[in-house]
Image 1 (cartoon, rainbow, N blue to C red):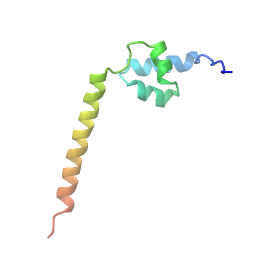
Image 2: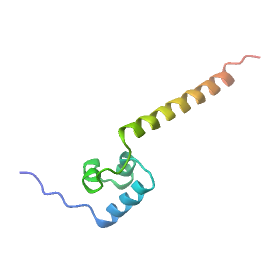
Image 3: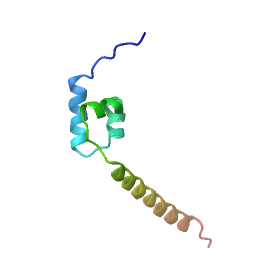
Image 4: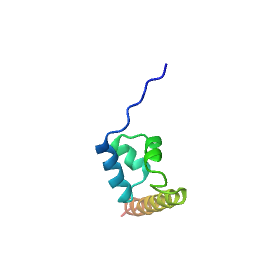
Length: 80
């Protein structure tokens, strides 16, 4: 027999709404509030990042990491 799930508290929903309005991704809202992404999709349809926005974010992070790695490697591999 399945358990009945309690609806999320109004405080957690309000916190999630604020984060989404500030531009946070659903994954970040999930980590911060503890609400499941399914719950976020149910209560805030169409909010959060699109697939393209998520891809752009990952690409920017990847490129930034590559740049940091190149700078680190350039400073640590020099021999005097």
